[in-house]
Every structure is written in C-alpha cells, then in structure tokens.
Image (cartoon, rainbow, N blue to C red):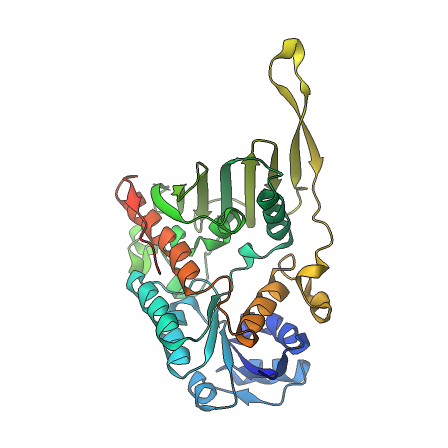
Length: 359
C-alpha cells in the first residue's frame, strides 16, 4: 500500500494530532473536518492543509480517504464509528468508544465482518513510562507483579452537558489502561463502590449518584489485583492521571501530582535484627525510547509523554501492514466494559460483577 490519506475529525482536540499525522512517513495526505468554520480555517491555515470538510458525511463520501480519526464529543463516537466503518474506512477513536454497553459487541462485529482496522486511541497505554515498565515486566525484572493502581482525577464541572452526572467509571480508561497495558491481562471480575453523593439536579440524563468511584479488579491468568479510582465532581483534587505497580523485586509510583517526581523502588539491605528489608526509592525517568517511533515523529514525543506519536504510528502501521492494531476493537471493548461493570457494581453496593469476554 502506498501512502494513505487520513481525515482528522473534530479539531478542538484533534488540532494536536494533525502535525503528527503529517510527519508520519506512511501518510501521504491529511484532511481536516470540523463543523465550526473558524476552527476549521484556523487549524487548516496553521498546518498548511488545503483539503477541508465541514461534515463527517462529506468525509465519508470521498473515495480518496483511507482512514478517519474521530476526536469528536464522546457521546457521538459510537454512531460515527458505525458510519465510518460502514463507509469502508479504517477508524481510530478517542476514548471512550461508546456510552452504551451493547455498542461494544457491535464494534467488534464490524471489525470482524469488514476486516477494517479499528483502534481506541488511549494515551494511557502508550506513554513513555508504560512502554518502559512493560519492557521490564516482560523481561522478568519485576518478578511476579502483585498489585497495580490507576487514578484519574479531573473536575468536570462546567463541561458540556453530556458530561453532567456521567458515571466516573464509564470514563476510566486513562486510569485502567496503564496497568492493563503493562500486564497484558484481561479484567474478569470487579467489585466497586461509589463515594460521595451528587444532588438530583447534578445527575444528568445518566442518573448517576456518585462523584467518585473506586473499583477492584481480578485479572485472567494472574494473581495480581488492580485498583482504579476515578473522580469527576465534588472532589477537591488537582487533575492527574497516575499509576503504580508493585512486584516482588521492584515497584513504581508514577506522579500522584503533576509536580511530584515518580519513584522507582528496589530492595536494599535487611532491616535491624534482620526484620524486613530496607527499600531504596529513587527518582524515576524513562530512558530514551526513540526506537519506538519513526524519527520523523520525534517532535511530538512530549505529547502525552510520547503516547500521541506512538498511537499514530501504531494506527498507520497497522493499516499499511494489513494487521490489527494493538488497541483494536476487542481490547477497546474489554477495557470499556470493565468500566461499565464497575459502575454496575457500585450501584449494587459493591457486589461482584463479571466482565464479559469479547472475541
């Protein structure tokens, strides 16, 4: 396959991704789409793009466009995905893939039926620390991983109306993805609790009563347990996406605040009287990971700790190489279903909820 044409749809968020696609050696052309004329014209001018569209329908009608990256409001993702793949185009989607559980199997079925590529562009799965720690875990450096934790705190007060009262765990992949990406395991069962109480007028169309939810996951073929906490309202906490991982030999705590240095833990000497062991904690900095992306994408290596260019590279490469991307419809469904199940558990007072497998 020669160089492909990619449409970036939704430029309020998508603007950051345009120059990355332009820099990719396998992308021949980038086109832009946004319903707001001033945004469309500004981003097109800033990136010297001449091909612009005001509607997704116009994008899908163009036979020259091979792939579409949806960076639109999350409540539109599912129907737009069906339209994109129904038009015979590969589809990348910002999280979350859908706000309806039944859509997950529909997306998997579309991937299987059409042979087109679907990719969930989850930045939490491709950041520098995740890529490096996965290498260490896969090599056996950590020994048996015992426990993982992910947190995502962000106040959504004043955001567009579809965010009002959204169940926190429905938008939890930024917290869940780092640990699952490192471990490569599927969540099978969850027990979760809600915290706090939203007033009736703040529960929106979703009817969710909780400003925060915390979930505890069991994983397939693993003795590790994973805890995920997500807050969206009424929680006085600086915004942060962080993860921690603890193994038999080493541990990592990544950024409980945006200013706090990540820490890497290793065993030291025996403690006094031979009881316990001293733990050495040192500031952690991922090594140079330029080998994980084409050199042309290095300019974007600071976006989401290198996640954005790696995601673009994986999506584009999967199309060119005619293979499924790493975060395909099955992975997207599995991780998203884990959030749906966690909210179900929280509403049920912490009862165990099984997470279905997707194929």
